Structure formats: structure tokens, C-alpha cells
Image 1 (tube, one colour):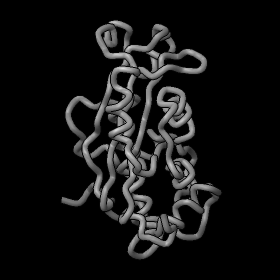
Image 2 (cartoon, helix red, strand yellow):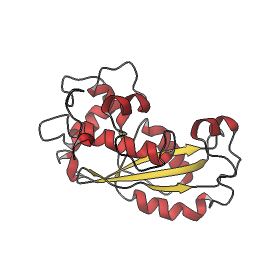
Image 3 (cartoon, helix red, strand yellow):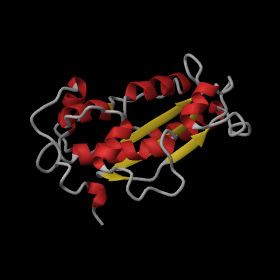
Image 4 (cartoon, rainbow, N blue to C red):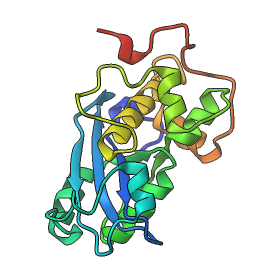
Length: 209
């Protein structure tokens, strides 16, 4: 795929996973949000029963209990569904290597040409004290008009706000939006550059009607 193509002429899939607290972690929840034509789609979400019970430390973070997944399918049962949702799109995530590590172990025959990290893109774009997803959600008001019932640290919420962050960043790096090559280069370095998306005083993409 040519890196000179406009970013919004490429299909992406924003991923987020939650684990059981084992080392290495097993999947408990997976969300995938498509971004096609620069438009954020609806999250697809799977609850998964891990081979090892969820630790209390992991439950404290994401709130998913062993009772919640007692009747959920195992990864082998839903692997084909997840791979179909991921497809050939470029994976995107916040600290995406963490999500990809779990997905690669859980879906050993799934592969991708490249991946983009919104953590590195955000470090290039903004001068902030924190680049945690919660801080960026507040900074860019990414939680406006979310579907009812979503909450932070669940896979569907984290994937959806990350998808919004990605579109916000990609559409603001250059007039008319960045190229795929721009995003790959920025995500490779993660260093702060001279061009930034619109300022906090301007409305974000998600404030628009």
C-alpha cells in the first residue's frame, strides 16, 4: 500500500483488549471499531471466558468479574469472528503494542502490514503533562454523546474514544489531512513536531452536529 495515499482513503480498525491479569494476560474482552473514509463506525465487542480466572487486580481496573464471563465463549469459539472484524485494515490503538501482543498470542494466524499508535501521534501533536487516554479524552472532549452505558476501561469505550482521537489527530496534522506515510513516520518517532491539530479553543470534530 502506497504511503502517499491520503489517510482517509485507507481502512483502519481501532482495537482495545482487556485481560485477566495473568502474565502474559489472556483475553477477557475485545473491541474493534472500524474507521472507513475517515468516519468512525460502531464498536464490535466480545466477552471471552479466559482459561485462567480473572484476578482481583484486573477486575479492579476493568470491572469484569469471573461471573460476568462464566457463560461467555472461549477465544477458540469467537476467533473467526474477531479476525473477520479486524480484516485487512490497519490496526490502531493507544499503546497499540500492548493490544497487539495479546491479539497475536490469541489469534496466531492473524497478521497486519503495519500499526499506528495514538499515544505516539498524540505526543507529536500536543504538549501535555499526561498522554494517558483519560487525559486525552478530557483534552479533546472525546466522550461527547457516547452510547449509554459505556464507561472507561471497558474495551468498547476505550476503542471508541481512541478511534475518535485517531480521526481528530489524522485530520489535523496537515491541511486536508495527513497521508498514510505522515502517520507512519510520526508514529515511528513519537516526537513532538511543529504542526499540531486545531487548538483546544476550536471545536473538535466531535462537537460538530
